[in-house]
Image (tube, rainbow, N blue to C red; front, side):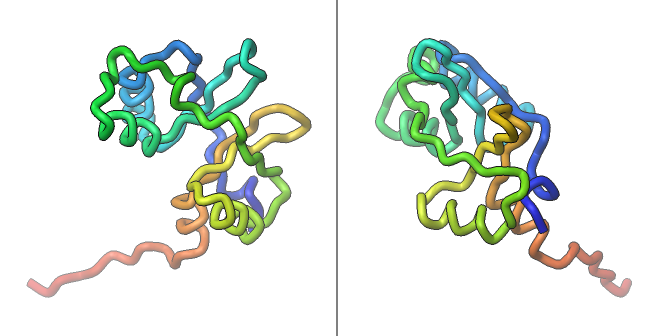
Length: 132
């Protein structure tokens, strides 16, 4: 199975000036664990994850004043849609992260997460019937 088969194609993109609270609210509303941060002034594409927000709050920083650009990972590892899920999982394990931005010919086409990969690899959920 390939990354294109597992990735989420609706990508949450935010700006570098979004506060962490705004980013968290958007991520919660979309039920995603990461947002792509588009910052043309700082060289392009970064990623802000729920872990980045959690680390900031854990340090006692104010999510209403902290900006996405101060917590964004800018050395992003990108996946290609034609990567296998094994290649994506290997990149995540090697880098210690849970999300890959998917680029196709320089354009963002999706995000693939560990959860997406697990959904593809794990057997479908089966309903458990409990006798009355």
